[in-house]
Image (cartoon, rainbow, N blue to C red; front, side):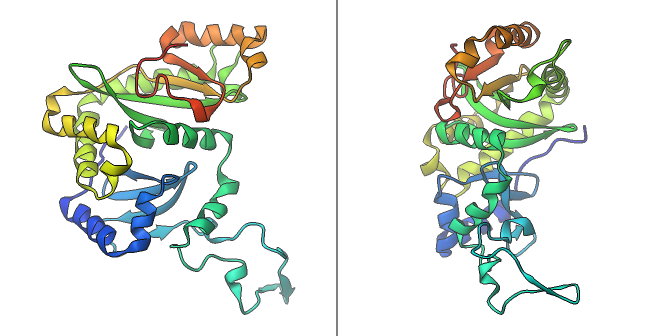
Length: 293
């Protein structure tokens, strides 16, 4: 793993705040509860259902967007005439492409087909909990789905969670399930990089505390971030990542085949570190607080 880093320069935070104050469309992105702002190293991402819709880097004057999110889904006539091997788009291309990224409704529709069941489930969990600090955290060759803040009384813990849909084959195996190896890699990387991770997420907390619109959207997270910023000695890395499993009904949960694999996961990862909830929209216990099955 290279040097782990997160955080924005104060001048860039001010630039984002200026746009929040002056640009109604940008303010609408920040205030939209369906969207999530994530701080990276020198840039920010805006996520929707696990899809990184927008990116703004320090030193650049405006946003970038992946071209796939500019194609309108479900157009009336999806077929384009071809002449001499070249597609002949009509004069009014608005029917096919989004021409203004301030059109949030259209961007969300365009991202929809790229959001699978796991990304959608993670989106639901983010929406249901007010302690999410980061998403899609790069950790070596992996990406941890969620980083959350948990109040542990005398400290604030950075807790790392990997989310899997019940149908994901990585949860099951005759031998050791692939997800167990994934969680073990996380353990190793977290413990080897504690200092850099704490330093980076302290900076993220400072950035988010100073960004317009963040405290109103996430009051519980804001309080924990303020505590971490003011008392950095109380911010710790929890070196025991959790596994989230969602997307099952009562019969599936109680089925003997799944119970066998669930016990294998609990034996390898830890009884209280495998978090279960059938409906991802109702997944709260264990994210911001202690988990009870």
